[in-house]
Amino acid sequence: MKPTHRFPRINGRRGAFQLLFGIVYGCLALAMSRKWPTSLEWMGEYMSHHVLVACWAIPTVAAFVGMFLPRPKDALSFALLTTAPILNGFLFIIGAFVAPEVTSPYGLIVYWALGAAVMVVSGMTGDRDRDERKVEAWKAG
Image (tube, rainbow, N blue to C red; front, side, top):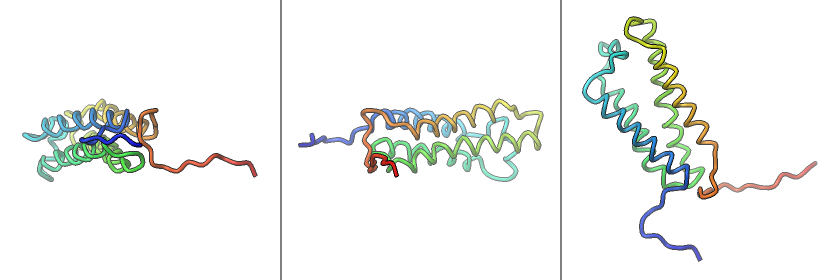
């Protein structure tokens, strides 16, 4: 018989990763909630900085929900956790052309590496992770 739990449990290492990155993304959203980061100030004439806050806040909420879900139901949260830093990396590329004096190429490297780290972890399965996928053994011929 399965043990019953009063509260939902975090889904192993995948859930712990989502919790950790949800906290990091939430901190990034809060840091950007007052004004544009210096390297992205050029965007101020096109839109409100709250768009960038939403870019980080939406994956934060998704991560806090997805950390309780078994694989593959947590796929959306991993997709959103990947999308936010990749999008910001593209903004740094655009900024390199629009405002090269304030845009650093390190932003592109850091954000894309962050997105790549999420993609790597999304493909992993730990021994304590709940997984609802049906896996069949491979048969020759």
